[in-house]
Length: 146
Image (tube, rainbow, N blue to C red; front, side, top):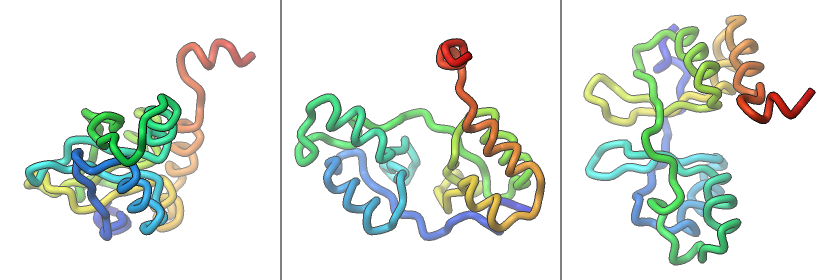
């Protein structure tokens, strides 16, 4: 099964110049926890609800005047719409991410795939394994939890 068969296609995108309040409202309207950030018709990053809270509000920034560019995650990973779902689930587990933007062959954003999409719509055993691996602590945090 290809990713395009189960990805969410109705993706809202935001500009890096938008403010955090705008991003939070778009997330609330779409009932999502992350938005792709695009500029000049290209994907340049992602902003999550956690970015808004930790990097924005937690750092004392004003959500109405702080730009998305100031708190977004740049250099994000992605997959292509023609990739195999099992391979993408494995990639998500290795990267320890719960969602990936989906690009077409022209590298244009066409959707987002989440572990939820994979586990709900694809009947395979790798999604459960991927979910467990994404949730595992890494690095120092793993060493401190005996």
